[in-house]
Amino acid sequence: MIKKREKKKFKRKNIKIQNIKINDIEKFEEEDIIEEKRAEKKIIEKGKISKKANLELKKGRILEVKSNYQCLVGVENSKVACSLSGRLKQLNLKTRNIVAVGDYVNVDFSDIPRIEETIPRKNSLSRFSEDDFQTEIIIAANIDQVVITSSFKEPKLSFGLIDRYICAAEINEIIPIICINKIDLADNLEVVKMKMEFYKRNNFIIIYTSAEKKYGIEELREILKGKETVFSGHSGAGKSSLINLLQPGMDLRVAEISGYSKKGIHVTSSARLLEWNFGGYLVDTPGIKTFGLRREDKDKITRVFPGISELVKECKFKNCTHTHEKDCEIKKAIEKGYFPVERYDSYVRIFESL
Image (cartoon, rainbow, N blue to C red; front, side, top):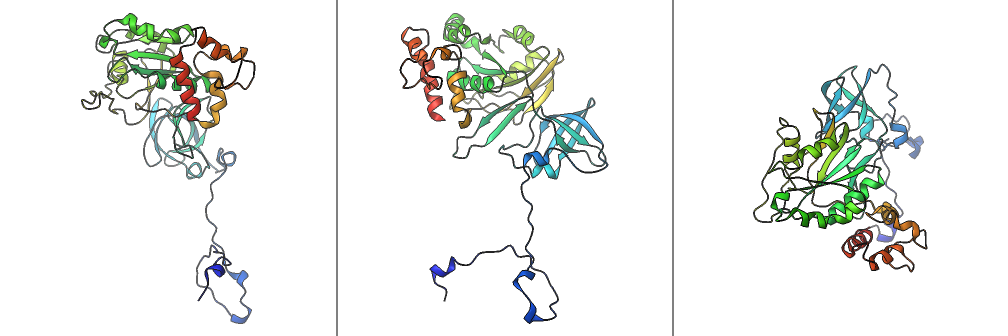
């Protein structure tokens, strides 16, 4: 009987079992055992370019990512259903999705259409899981701006979510646009504008809309013309209703707010790239309730949080976290009433969560 202590001496081997002919059992050595070679994850640099011969590659753009590694790709004014190359599936990525809506890819047409290569991204907008080993969920790639869609009421205006989106956009060099929808539910629009004064003072673009009253639609359309824009934000904020007004005929599904929780219900199930008839592209995404930031970007948050970018230059320490340091310009601005306490509390919550 093997004791527990002796068990540790044994090392498991990858053994490929097969019938072999042994002429002399006495000369059989352990080295004759064939170890099984398993497929390993490829590093990204080795997997970017396909080395297959006789490929017929055409450049396209991913319009929608479906299940089971299937994508809808726009190639030369046509929409083509494509599968993902087996090589790309083996890339050692830290993201949940290998490709994202808005990605440019090279498609092989020598047989069944297949995505063989991905073209480096200009940028991407991502959210991150809150677990111990964060997973990146890419929302959209190669975009100019993000319309952060929130609602004044039902669901309630979420400044914390707006702050998180702005931080992610600034880090990835994407222009953030704040869209406050459902202003028809406000008793006084000026009160809403007062709540948003901090963002206006810091030169963020703010649009006030009402899908119900068709208010602010033309102003929003002008901002979208000729740009590649991702619409994202709080579930139930009326994103799909706004898009249907901006371009009648898209017929995106809309849903009522949950009567029980007064929170949004997910209607859009997957991201899609759509073309505006007035110029530019739209990435329509599922609404979210939380937007996690990457922990590796913690130091960047101290510089890109709304309202901090200019003040941080005057802080005594270059690596000031604006939490406990003396001679912090942000804290001085709070004392003078220039930087709202509510926004500072939001900054601290985000910083500590990372």
